[in-house]
Image 1 (tube, rainbow, N blue to C red):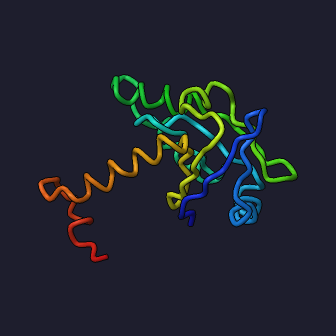
Image 2: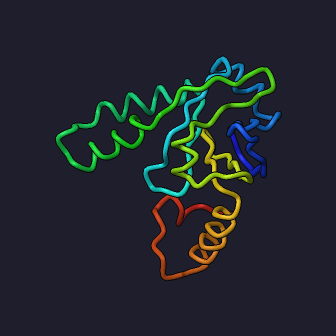
Image 3: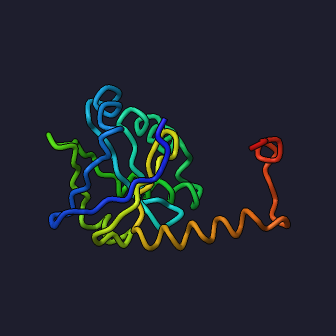
Length: 152
């Protein structure tokens, strides 16, 4: 399971060094192969180990493409997906179009999200995090049934 936040720098070529604590897991579960794609909800990129991506991609492909929302999701997730392999130093080269989409320049935050990572511009993530905390403290917001039962 991927969790936590790591603050990293992209190098001049747009390469991102995967945190060392995750490299072994990625090597073991997906032969160091990952897929990076645009987050359809905007703001960041999604990074999946290849084995996790295969499950997601099959589900997305199976959606009826005659439904406009499904077709848009397929275009975003599948159309922007890039198959990548970590190099010997644990780096991946993020494609320029995806870096531009997420506004990634130099400083990035990589967030573990269980089966995947989100890759954010560091400043954008700081603003998003503040907004998320404010929203979580808004007691007028609706909670899902599962979240309402969760005790922290």
